[in-house]
Length: 125
Image (cartoon, rainbow, N blue to C red; front, side, top):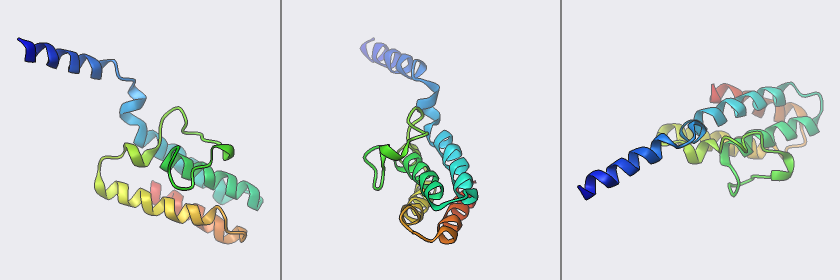
């Protein structure tokens, strides 16, 4: 009887879990893809870097390498993609995208940074 009660509470806990907590990874990937596209079309290096930071923040989340809250976090309500991703191959791909984007956020060459952004958008689709 005790096991049944514990199992019932566990199931109830999942039932009351916000939907965003279950789908954070895919939602954050979608937002990151959108911001990678915005970065690839930005008209100046500051906007390219800003949107690349949004991509990075969505991928790694607070405490992640390169996260910068001051740059904005469009995934703040949904959570970061990498920590929410269980599939090892997808997680590896996201980490590679994050490493490339991290480098793009400091590259002063607008065309090179836009290339990083377009490559990130393609990889995240």
